[in-house]
Length: 276
Image (cartoon, rainbow, N blue to C red; front, side):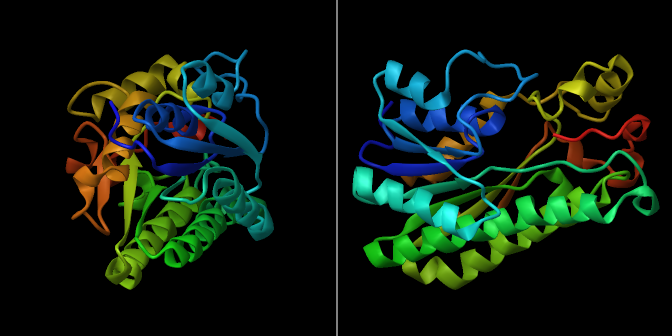
């Protein structure tokens, strides 16, 4: 407890899934959290309690949090979320660019321009906006900062049947690496978390399909899907001083999945196209 005492964090897509888990974990370690999302309520179909918002949970456990309505594809709204952190808590130390969307479920030639645009707008432009405005604030403060981008194993090698998603996550990975090089001299670190399939509202239709669930598990040496808590604990580490000399790294959080060939990991996801 207390690894992040006095720190201020902004988490995008924070109402549900990874963002909610990360926000709670950061707050448990003492961080003050800006909970940024399109809406305050959790996504339907998730694994969390839908009756209480992320900021309310943090406040009830004795922490400090503020909800900021934010569409990450709009630079003005991301800038507002960063300004909220500064106005309410005096500074910004950590940003977690978690907001993301999935488009796929079929081979590339069957997918649409809208599928591509959605993935690029949210997963790439959204991360760009978050990084750009956080870095601007970090540079004003002059004492560094922590950038954590939720990338996905799809950004490391890609999977069949989700070309737009793979493209967007590959771009997020290289954005992270570029920032690490450009801003490392300013004590700003940038790292990526690359989860495999984890249990969230985004993947629940896959998890509840027994054939798909078992197929995924058969490709993972640890034999299970990831949990939100797995991602949250890694985010705390990357946000803390324990990771001060780690910069520009894409951390696979996959139970060993990426040790085997991506080309053999279709998972049968073409059976349906799932949109968040």
